[in-house]
Each structure stands twice: as C-alpha cells, then as structure tokens.
Image 1 (cartoon, helix red, strand yellow):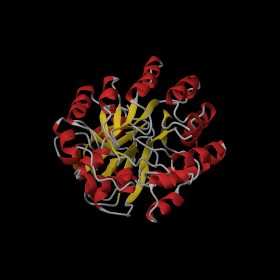
Image 2: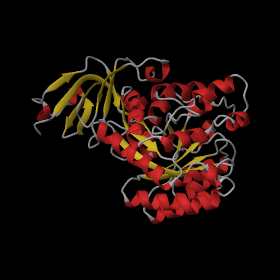
Image 3: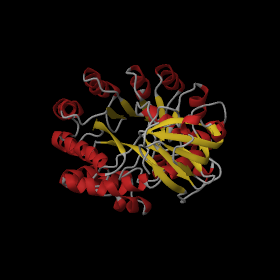
Length: 403
C-alpha cells in the first residue's frame, strides 16, 4: 500500500465497465485510489484487508462515475458568431450571412488576428465550463487558422491548455476543415501547399495526437481527405472524420478503411457505412449540439448503429458557429431527447465510448489499473445526469487521484 492510498467509500459506483448490470452499478461501493490510479473497486463489504487501514473518505451515498470525456471540440478559436445567429433568426439566408462576412470565414479571420495568448485566454473560459461539469479529458481541434503558421498556433494553444489546467487535452490536426478564401476553387492546391506541410510541421513539433477532416460538398471530397489520411498514416497518427453531416459522400466508410478511431456527426450515414464502421471498430460520435443549433431534421441512424453494435460517443462539438455548446451534461440530455439514446447510452457515450473515440484505454471506466479520473455527483440515480436541463449536480471532480 502506497502512502497516498485513499479509500472512497459509502457511494454508488456507476463503473460503466459493462459488468452485466445497468451502468455497471455497484451499490455500497468502495474504490481504492493509489498513485493516481484505481487500485481496487467493488462492494465495500469485500474491501481487501490490505486497504483496511488506509485513509477513508465517506461519500455519503453520492453517485461516483468516471470523469466525463469530451471527445470532439473546437474550443480554441477566435471571436464569436452571435451576430450571424441573430441574423439567421431575423430571416437572413446562409448566403446572405456569408456575403456579410459571416460563417467560418469570420472565425478564420478572427483566429488569424488573435495572438496565441488571446486564444488560450478565451479557450480557458470554455474549458473551465467543461471541467466544472466533471470533464477530465477534452479533445481540441485546429482548423480555424488554415495557414501553416496559424494551424500551428492553434495546436500550440491546445497544448498550453493542458499545462494551465488540471485536465488532459488531446490535440487533433484539422487542417482539412475548410478551403480558405485565398484558395477558393483550388481545394487541391490548398491541400498541397498548406494542409500537408502544416501536418508535417505540427507532427515534427509534437503537437498532434490525431488527424481529422471535414468530408462534405462544402469542404473536401473523400479523395482529398484520403490524401491527408495517407500522410497521417505515414506519420503514425490515427485518423477520424467529420462525415455524413449534410449529405452522404461515403466519408464514414472511407474513414473506416483507414481504421479511423471515429466518424462524427453521421446524420446521413447509410447502412453500408454503418457496416463499414462496425467492421473497423470505429466509434460513432454523436453531436446533438450542431443538430440543434442548425435546426436539422434528419437524425443519425441510432437504431442501425445499435443493430450493428457500433459504439456511440456523445460530445459537445463546442465551436463558435454551429454548436456554441460548453455543457457535456446538456449534450447528454440532447442525445436522449433529440436522438432517443437511453440515459445509460448517453453516459457511456461521455465516458467509456468517448475514451475509445480518442484511442485511450486508460480512462472512461472505474476499473482496477485505470486512471483515477472520477466525478462525484449529488444525485441518487445515474439517469439524473442526462435527465436534468441546465442543472449541474457535480459535487467534486477527481483528476489523477487528486480532488
């Protein structure tokens, strides 16, 4: 027993470990923390004798879960787009908003103008909101710089967030997010002259944990994304993809052929795409915030994903334009109310399956040997985490064994 060993007792533990019971729930549970890891979990009555003298914290019947994981965010970006939100509500079309300087071009302009310090400062407000709801791991994408240096600036800012806060940040290169104005009509030239060189430079600097792309008619074709993925694979980096959000270009199936960690959005995913994801083990990342904000009407094929056993993660898609959502709890509620996930699926989606979508095997469940990233909640039942709207029942977050 190490000197820092602690026993969390008197709790209900939703282990999310697939132990054959809903939520992997253990009533009257005890969890032993040692060296930043989980050393043991089980019924308190079965606590091994070696831990009997360890310091004990009574959680007084509270619910204990794995800390939450937000596996899809664009948390580092310049400016905001509240003005175009208001324009749309006043009847402006997408084209009218774009002609007025709105859309992603607005965010790119603001991001390029912002200093690295400014990007970190504004991102920390969003990150703090996620941490305040029990998140311990957050993915952050680039994609709003769209020059070599500005993409590097975004990825460096993402790394700094993990140094400024007690949170694990994974940085994803999203150079193939949009074609910038200076490359209008020349997407292949952008890939050659900006995206691929930026990826090589970011990898050389140790700034990239995964590579993403946006496969849509308004962004990049499957063939163009494949060129980015070929380089990612040559560099030994895992891939993921924004796919089938607005149309079906077969992006999810293409990503599956590359062994993608995940395909995200998926409103227009068809059965062959679901089958391809099931065969590759790719996670379906469900993003209800964008569906809600854009007032979409076509939901992801949840029944098909269940039928084929494709794991479903839930994330905020936090970004300035289509999903200005910094609440993972609300994303869980939206996944249930808009897409009819069960509360258990929503919690698994923000813990166990979110970890898998990031290629992580050391978190997302309460199990021996995993990181001691945990959340203590002032609720009686796990379903309450997805049930309440605009209410944060977090009592305490534990990160690497430290409260």
